[in-house]
Image (cartoon, rainbow, N blue to C red; front, top):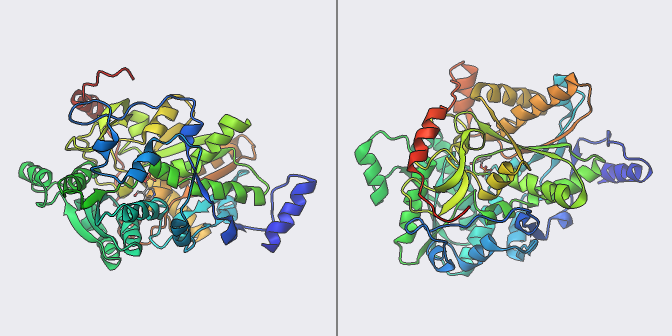
Length: 474
Ligand SMILES: Cc1ncc(COP(=O)(O)O)c(C=O)c1O
C-alpha cells in the first residue's frame, strides 16, 4: 500500500496517472459489502419473463421449482444495493479483492499512446470470475435446505466454480458438460471431480431431452442450450430435492459479479485514472456486466462518459447479428422465455475453443442496454483472438482464457486506434480467467490449425421462425 498511498498523495495536488506502480492492490477491508443492482438505476422498463409452456408472465411459484426464494427475490429486486452475507464474504476473502494491473509491458510492445489496465479475476481458486456468483448461489441454496444443485458448463469454468462452492457448503452438484468441451478439456472435468462434482458429457442418456437429442444425432457435440435443458429437467423432476443453478444471463448473476467493478473503481482511483473505455467478453454477459454496470451507473448518475464495449466471437454473435426478441433460454423450451439478443434456441455452435462464449442468447438487461445504445458490441475472429492472447502472454506473463482473450483483442484494436489518432485513451479490460487448462487450444493455434468462422446471417433468419409467438407487448 505504500506506493498506492504515494499515488493518492499526488492525486490531492494534481490528477496524474500513477507511474510508480503496476499492481493496484486493495486490502481485505476493501472487499465490497454490497452487490450493485443496475435495475435500480436503469432508465429502461424491464421486459416480462414468461413461462415456456403458456407464454404468460412467470410467478415466484413457477420459478421456485428451480431456484430458492432468496435468489428469486434478488432476480426481481429493484433495490440499488443488496448486502453480501458474511458467510459469502468469508469465502470471497480466499481470493478477493482481486488485483488490477497496468499492462505497461503490453502497451510498450504495442507502441500505443493508450493506457491499458486489466482487472484479473483468474486468481480465484477455480481460475475465473465465476465463483463470484457460485458462492452466493450455493449459500442461498444451503440456507433453503436444497440437497443438490444441477447445472451446465461449457468450457468447464462455471462447473469448476460451482463444484468449488458446493463443496464449501456441503451440497452435491451434478454438472452437464457440453460434450465437445468434455472431450477437449478433460482436466477441467478432473478439477470438478476433485471438488466433489459429478460430471456428465451432454447430451447424456440420463434425461428425456438428452436421449431425444442422441436419437436424432448420436454424434451431437452438444451445446449450452442442450446442457441447460438437461440440468433443468433433472432439477424440475427431483421433487424439490435438487435445484438448478445458472452461471450467467440472469439478473442476480450479473449483480453478484458487480464486486469486480466496485473494486476496480477504487483501484482506478489509486492509479489516478478513470477509464474512457471498459471492455469485457460476453457469453451470457456476466463478467462484462460485473465490470460494466457500475461504470454504467457512473454514466447514468454522475455524468461520466465511459464507452462500454462487449466482445463476442464471430462464431456466436448474439449481440451483433442476433435478433432482439423473446426466446427460450434453452433448447428443450423448458427454461423461461426472456427478451434478449438471440441466435435462436436451436443454435448448435461450431466447435470454437472459447467454449464459454457459445450461448445462443444474452443477458436480458445487457440486450436492452445494447438495443438502447448504452452499450456497444463487436465480434472478433478466433485466430485474431489467439494472436492477441499470445501477445498478452508474452508481455504480461498471464496466459488468458480464450474467452477473456476476446476482450484483449478488442483492447488492442482500441489501443491502436488511439495511437493512430494520437490520443491517450484509458482502457480497462476484464481478464475474466486464466487459460492454464486451455493448452489444446493454444497448441492448435500455434500449429496453425485454428479456423475462423463467421456465423451466417441466413442461419439466424431461419432460426427466427422457431421463436415463441409472444402476444405481450414488448
Ligand atoms: C473465463 C471466462 N470468461 C468469460 C466467460 C463467459 O461468460 P460470461 O459472459 O457469463 O462472463 C466464461 C464462461 O464460461 C469464462 O469461462
